[in-house]
Amino acid sequence: MAAAASSTTLKPSASAATISGFRRLPLSTTFGVTTLSFRHRRDQPRRFIVLSMDAKPTILVAEKLGEAGVNLLKEFANVDCSYNLSPEELCTKISLCDALIVRSGTKVNREVFESSGGRLKVVGRAGVGIDNVDLAAATEHGCLVVNAPTANTVAAAEHGIALLTAMARNIAQADASVKSGKWERSKYVGVSLVGKTLAVLGFGKVGSEVARRAKGLGMHVIAHDPYAPADRARAIGVGLVSFDEAIASADFISLHMPLTASTSKMLNDETFAKMKKGVRIINVARGGVIDEEALVKALDAGIVAQAALDVFTVEPPAKDSKLVQHENVTATPHLGASTMEAQEGVAIEVAEAVVGALKGELAATAVLTELKPYVSLAEKLGRLAVQLVAGGSGVKTVKVTYASARAPDDLDTRVLRAMITKGLIEPISSVFVNLVNADFTAKQRGLRITEERILLDGSPESPLELIQVQIANVESRFASAISDSGEIKVEGRVKDGIPHLTRVGSFEVDVSLEGSIILCRQVDQPGMIGKVGSILAEDNVNVSFMSVGRIAPRKQAVMAIGVDEDQASSH
Image (cartoon, rainbow, N blue to C red):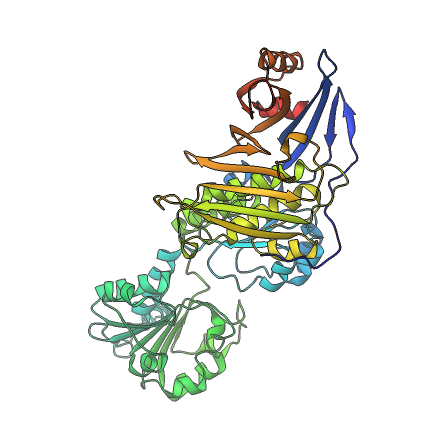
């Protein structure tokens, strides 16, 4: 949980503009708050709160993206497709953009994030690897980084197998020889794959698909990956071994690990010396995992018989590169994901991830499907709670309660806490909050969020029964939101996959948190629903649903009203 570390206090804006009897508070993101004041015939005040949507975000696509992905982006945002930007041009454009989509050719470094001025909320990498994005700088600037980890899996695996077979049978060299007018059958005698040992280094999505295909070619496949589950490897007939055992026993080595500090130059002079003489190497992962100078020496010494490379430390490599020009090297220009099907799939996957992130949703890889509606509920409760705080009141202490039949170890609330923090902070500041920076942002602003869990009896089939958000030591602009214990209190549940508001202060209500909502305090007496409906009708506001919560007959009550979004935003 986030602890208070600053004297800064969150305060809703007190300024407002009056338009046709409505007070509209200026809020910067996703939702705005509109407060409507009018008097009943008995001069009794009525107060309404309406949530409405803001303008389209802007997405910069800096490298070629499939048409299907671009079209998906255009349905949600303003899209600027500007390719081949220089670093200076990218830094100039980025301050006007909410999201950036790149492939592997664009470096998204610290300067890019600093140039964005805090506006950049999402970087989408159209592909698997994200080593061209400065993750530390992204975290510091509160920017989510998403990728497309599955769409090009098969394409990359197929290219790995293509390089494996082409290398084994000298396809590229023989083709060049024939086209130069030669006929050198004896020079290009290859090796068979059947019965040979293939070591797959990195047994993730691509590595496991390569293993499946190599098994189909009759190869004996082993793998090294410190994070791979042994049962998944066994299921496709692959044995997990140590790194040293893998490189010492392999006839072919296929690389499929990300480029990190621990994998940089993993294949070097020392590791080449441990390999079987005449080993053949395939790399469709990242160029930096091989020490290229060491590989040239190993090729010249005959330790490595051949190499088939789709990636290089610097791309494109120098024209006079000794590695590329080596007669025993087959080279392709980073074609791993270059199939028509993969390009469209990557475009759609990264577009969906970027749009989801801009909407405040989670990347599919980051959260279980069953938690998604609760994530939405958490953010909306945070937004509603903070918008109920009176102008001038500082939000410092928030308590979140989760009621669930699941044991604490079976319910990770970090994602929910992050989204509540997002809902609390974004409507009253210019900061963009996400999973990366939520706790840090709360701490920086002196916002202390505590969590409490209530263990319920019953089936743990549903992850949560309810979420409750309380803000202490503040005044409310909607008096009925104050509970008997003196805090602003809102509570919600998920019903049929839809977030519902089920309590405001001490009043039970039941309204969907979809679209726009009006909260109205009243005295419970005959005719009140009709009177409120008539008042709304006078302003051409159409009611879609209504719920009344009361403590006792003819006492104070709360009316929750759903209205059409376009009408709410126009008033």
